[in-house]
Each structure stands twice: as C-alpha cells, then as structure tokens.
Length: 168
Image (tube, rainbow, N blue to C red):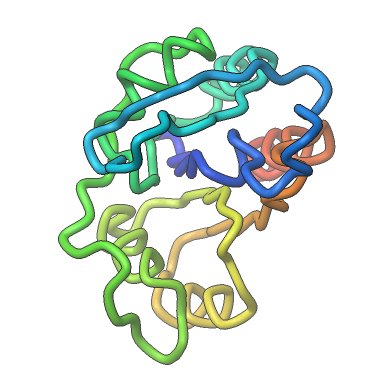
C-alpha cells in the first residue's frame, strides 16, 4: 500500500501571502466562490499548473488526498486547474477548533485519517509542536513538510517528497 500524500491548498498550492500586487511567476489568477466564501468579491486564488504535473508524477509513489479546508470542493475548484483527477479528501469533523497541546487543529485529524499508514503532509501551518505530536502518536513513517504561504511549493519540496517515498 502506498503512503498518503496529504495536500493542503492555501499556502502550498495557492501562495495567498505573496505580494498582492504581483502574481508569482508561473501562476495563473483564478476567481472562485467556494461554498464558505461569503465576501462580495470572488476569492483570488493563484495556481501553478506545473504543480499538477508534479503531483501526478508523485501519484506513482503516493495516494494523493486533499487535506484542506476546501474539503471535497478542491475537486471542483482546484483540481481541474491543475489537471488532477478527483481525489479523496479529509472531511474534517471540526474545522479551526481546539487541538491538543498547542498543535495545529488539523494534526489530530491527519493522524486519524492516516490510521497508522505512512504519510507525507504538505501545509503552511505545520510547527515543531506538530512534528513532536506526530512523532509521539504515529508509529508509521511521516514527513511533515511546511511550505511557505508566500512562495508555495518549490522544486526542492517535490524532490524531498519523491526522495522520502523512495526511501520507504
């Protein structure tokens, strides 16, 4: 069984904190209205189609899963712009709620979803506390890869994911 690759959208795929005046190189601007978006103006999302190519290449080594607050809507709003097929997603029982011992709210649910399987997780909110929690509560191999919300996924991130899977 392949390890899981748990993919956050905002930060890794959509570098939302990049300078607002300048779209990052290689990214296209998309205007979206996912169900949780209540603002008058559509949400601006920057996506790089090369990320889809890279993720599909990793699909030989991983089972790709959305691990985002977009939940299943990532299949409607994000995946098609990246050329990704419909992916399973984590249906968070509670979003933005309390988390154990200062960890990110997603961490506890990531471990539940992984259910003892090896996984790599890409997210912009991973901290040292999350690494510690996973080390203490997950017996299988795990790679927690923090991606800057200012720059998104970069070549070294994809290389690290490929190398980690190959070393399992």
